[in-house]
Length: 217
Image 1 (cartoon, rainbow, N blue to C red):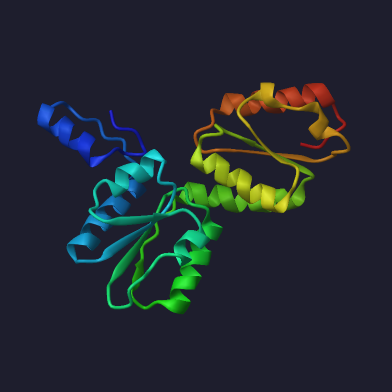
Image 2: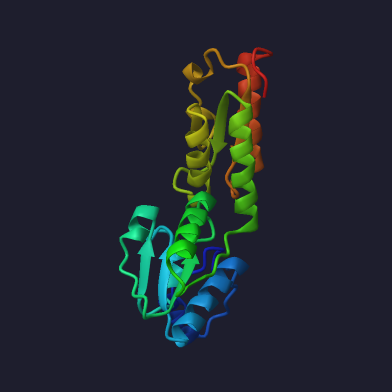
């Protein structure tokens, strides 16, 4: 079974060699990015990939390439040496922070004519990012529920934190801190894509049970 993040070319090759039955649950967006990478390299284009090089999705995708430059920030991107005489293809991690993508996209469009932009940021991820951006402006405190190693949960936290200082990333109700709720009347809760609903409900129940009607949720 191959998970939604996909896996490396080396693992695919081993599985095919062993002739095992493969259940490939790789996300369709990940598959499209991987395909775009291979097609771009066939055309002789250099690959620039925006994402976390330690993330399993990124490791899997770039393993299908021969020469991929990976950057994880705007600063890293502008430090790249881009040759105006060569053709490039820009690809992104599916859970990339949309603000980072648009910043790099605008910079490319202003400065380069030889960089093709191919973005497949997950639709669900994009909608969650837009929603937390709106939520962070409307409440006094935001709880983001998700694994602290999850890329999309951390992106939600970063977006919220930039807008609302009282933003906290927690994995379950045991990580709630009573001091966070001092002088807070309105609380917002959001969650990473893979966070089980029961964990979110437990946190909501804990807040309502502890603080009764003192807070809006």
